[in-house]
Image 1: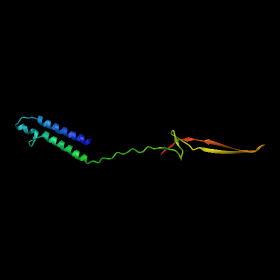
Image 2: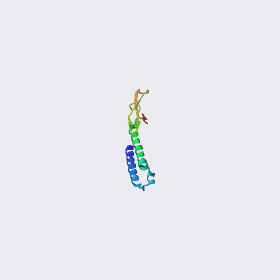
Image 3: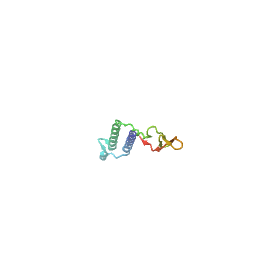
Length: 127
């Protein structure tokens, strides 16, 4: 893009310098050499200097190194402890089973076992 802009600027500079050189009509005589240096119009010298500067800029810029774009870093992913599943943005803890055994005595002796199932949720960690 920069090279294109520089080339367009150079073309416009050369075109305008040519127009200035054509429009500077002066009468002949001793004053006729006032706007020239060695028979070359000052506008032509300026246009040549501008063109040389633009050409030097193009050559200088053409050897530049273009760096590749840097990809964004990966986003951290939520994760749960162990094999706990991630459900709706929250980790669901594994089922904990509590077994309680009761033994009673009295007129009759017996044993009862009760099982309670417990689940819990917690926030996931970002890794």
